[in-house]
Image (cartoon, rainbow over all chains, first blue to last red; front, side, top):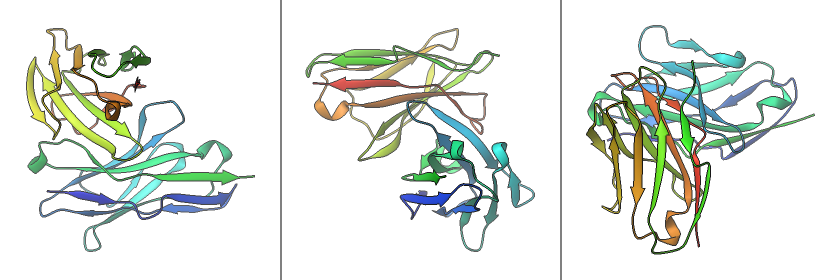
Length: 114
Length: 112
């Protein structure tokens, strides 16, 4: 079985500052990794995904994430945030073992202040 | 290309009633998954349908059921509603392999 841990429930940051949202996972098999963003009163939007290949993955809105197999991490980064990045961010994992259903972390609320 | 649509967007029901939620996937997508989102339990997988067959199921009681039609549209039903069923119900569609799931805006169900 897989699990996902997002240790930070909320991350406050000033506009134009860099940010890192942490995600660690647990799995005994190979996994696929995802970051989703949820704006208020909306569904989830896929930011980026790691399926295979290069461990540095670039996504939409200037976000990127790095897959680190030895540390079982998939941290999300952005070099300069905007007020509009304020949202809830979810890390998720899937695998063939779990029939590709998404297993989500508890989410991190990114709060960007002017 | 139109995204995933869910109807209704908001719903208020009374304990003991039943409810049906609808999801229309992106054109060409044959897999539809349902997730429940609550403040306490977070995002949890309910079930997934592919070509009118339930392919995966999460750990929810039998009161939660679903189906998929030949046009890939899906419905989920919750019978004998409980207060704890109040949640945002999200539908996601994908191609065969489920590796990239596209979510709808959700249906906010409130049980009173």
